[in-house]
Length: 277
Image 1 (cartoon, helix red, strand yellow):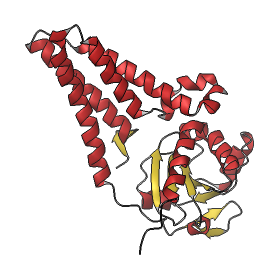
Image 2 (cartoon, rainbow, N blue to C red; image 1 turned 120 degrees about the vertical axis):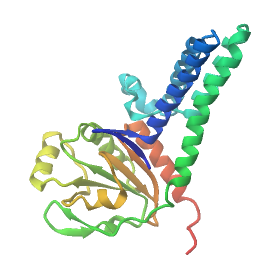
Image 3 (cartoon, one colour; image 1 turned 180 degrees about the vertical axis):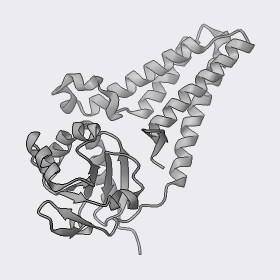
Image 4 (tube, rainbow, N blue to C red; image 1 turned 90 degrees about the vertical axis):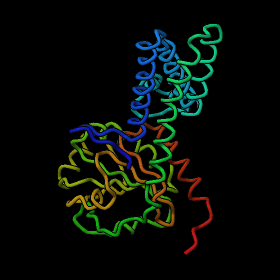
């Protein structure tokens, strides 16, 4: 499972786990406030804020060449660009410092923070355990913009990034420039942009209006790829190794920096020895 659906809203599973963990931690803090007369809530929020800020800054520094060319993009956290380990370490260091002299708050704060952390860690481990093994590239045909059909496997044979998108999808539209830049910057990786259910005329008009010059823009009229890969929302990006096995999937918008992070992970996975038959 890579997403949680609440009515019309779709949240990546990691975002849902972070929110649930913060809610649980604050619920534990509220319990101490109500039944023990001790309120670790303000300290807990300082830990959370410090953790998020440092997690973001570490990620930004890892991709500083991209972010520094557009400094305002540092503030746009919709891309999910955070370094989780740096965030957790910072949060617990801040918590230890805040309670160094406030001894009565130490145990309540540890209890609240630990509850949130264990929910996040446990949820992540459980979700990983329940995720099926690397799935092969689906055997379907897609349609090129000239109307001819081509097997999706035609694009396999080297690392492959497949982006499921639609012109009516705002986050799809926002991430398209990043996708185009990545395609141009990584000629050794095949990028395929599989439009879901729209007409060739609509796609051509959209690409022309926005000056998008991209290769391998194809059409999936019946949305077979969405059905075969269990895609619940757009954009969704699927990353396959050269053997055609799924290594990563991401639901939601990707920035240039988060896409580079995914591509780096794909290169690492593709460099591993080929799986045995």
